[in-house]
Amino acid sequence: MSYAGPVFPLTLKEEDNIISADRNINYNFSLRSEDSIRVWGADVEDSYTLSNTSNKEKTINAVYPFAGSVQELDEQRPVIKVNGHEVSPTLYAGGYSGGFTSVYGADDENGSLNIVQLNSWEGYKSLLEDGNYQDNAFSP
Image 1: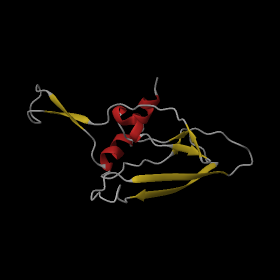
Image 2: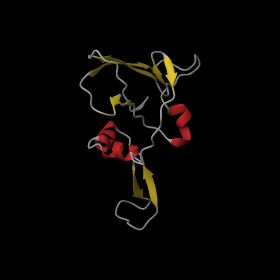
Image 3: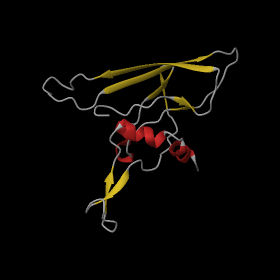
Image 4: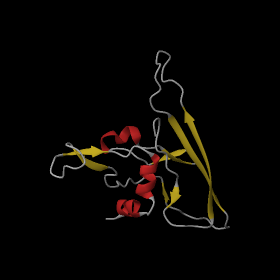
């Protein structure tokens, strides 16, 4: 998460035993320019080869979750390509994934609140474990 992430896996919206996937993920940590001594953000290429083991053509709906903010959507939205051609995916926004804490300490129930963002893969794992977060993102 310090450089680019978290990077979630592609999944199918509905379970399908006929479709399989091979994943290849590459991180590029090279410097942004010759004078830059700081690496801030990695370029990530997360690619998949999907295979249909049946003898019939299939249409599938794939889900590729990513963490980001509405304010920085243009910079954080993944570029999705199918057979090398960019596609315009339908975006679904999940609810706020973090929490809140009191400005005056954990014991103060009446103070104003500060936003607490998720800052570890464990936080995202916990958020996504039972499927409720994703179900809520797809709800009307």
